[in-house]
Length: 124
Image 1 (cartoon, helix red, strand yellow):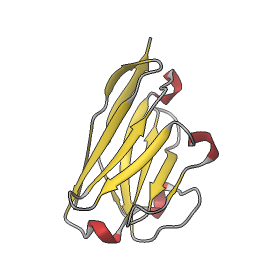
Image 2 (tube, one colour; image 1 turned 90 degrees about the horizontal axis):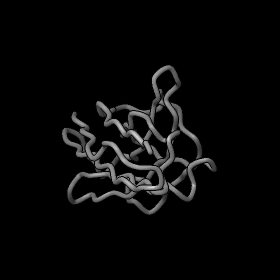
Image 3 (tube, helix red, strand yellow; image 1 turned 180 degrees about the horizontal axis):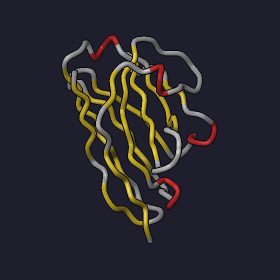
Image 4 (cartoon, one colour; image 1 turned 120 degrees about the vertical axis):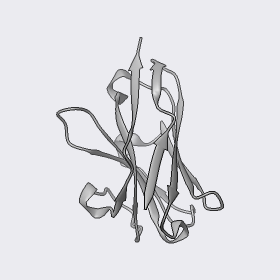
């Protein structure tokens, strides 16, 4: 099983980034996909999740409006579009996979597979 994030980097305040997560080694179509982020010294924070079909997404209130998750099951890819970026969005971003989707905030232990993360730095 492999999940490989890409697309991170340095972005100015107010800018946008689109992160990608390429997956292999499991039946991608059967898995809900989530995104998390982690700043050094802090707990891993849930950003949002998309169902196996892509027909359902959930974001906690703090993430609604600026973050959008999408997926392409033909390519085994999941994406995180981030807009109006702020310095507090600086973190390592991770994609993760789990079998079942539900509407709600997830904890990291609920996910089966993880990528290695991609770093996003938002700076003036």
